Image (cartoon, rainbow, N blue to C red; front, side, top):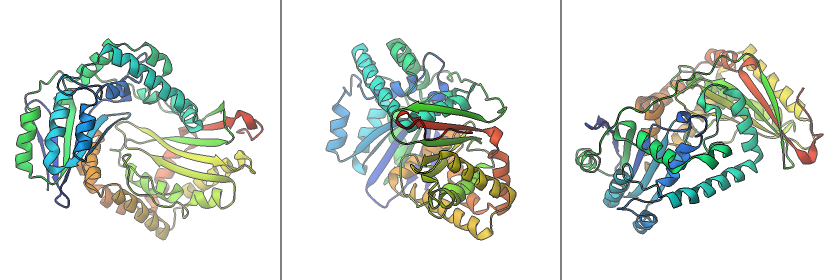
Length: 430
């Protein structure tokens, strides 16, 4: 049973009863992410998420951690391009703790100046740790090159220059602007009765004041004018290749056919970033073309569901005994092959089956069900989730070929090479 309603203050509530276990998963989603950040304040959404764990007068820092652990529950939060979310999964009879906690920190987080400075150190250290990872450095360079205008340009964690200068007042203003009931979605799945649970939610959240709709940046990315190639050098011993194509938003009609194309080329992607399931990609075309022939050590592909057009990305790990140019050439051959000839129906049916399976794995437990209630609402609606499997099943070989021709064009991509300084002669892109 699934219900959706909106409280008078604008809070959207989605409830799904699942009576298979005495558990409830409770999520609060805010329509704010790195997409809403201006130059000089990148990373501020992620930083505000951190500050939400620093306490309120009612729930001082550390108190919720102990209370949730004592009741046998878990909690966490995530910041992404388009949204920020917080969740608690608890025994059903203890869910009031989650309701009280999230309603309180929607309006009463402290943002103590000393805590702000302490967290600045933590986030800068996180940023520095990321920079030690080759794929982060490469991915950041590719993303920045792909988006010159749109605010998807920068990583969620933000730029180090901004992390050093953002103030407590900046953080608090961001919080007060975006953390409002009318900019939030509450989702809950588990062992409860919807009508009585809605009354409990209204008692906790109904009196919180709404605000003016928050400002939104509208900076569409111009059409790519040609392929971009770049090289990043850094520490390590492994050469990596990242190929990112501009891809449609999740609400675009081509999104489902691209998911089948992804499954066929590189193995199915798990759209649930929270977790769930995994399927081997050894039957995929790129695995056979790159791994079986020892042109590369690994290949992965995938995209994410976003509000605005983002990227469909392939990551290739170079084989130590093979030139990376050979891997790129073989990759391009496989893309051209599927653009020139529709794939056999049996290959498409297998790709659909694998894509459907990984989607099912990523939505089977109570926490994942509550996740999808909110996640789908961020970029479309829960109907998108409920019809996803049926839409996958309708994809034809001709559609797979068409979306490959439409989206996987060379002028529509950024090709990035990570070259470890210890092996500068590993190969350069032509």
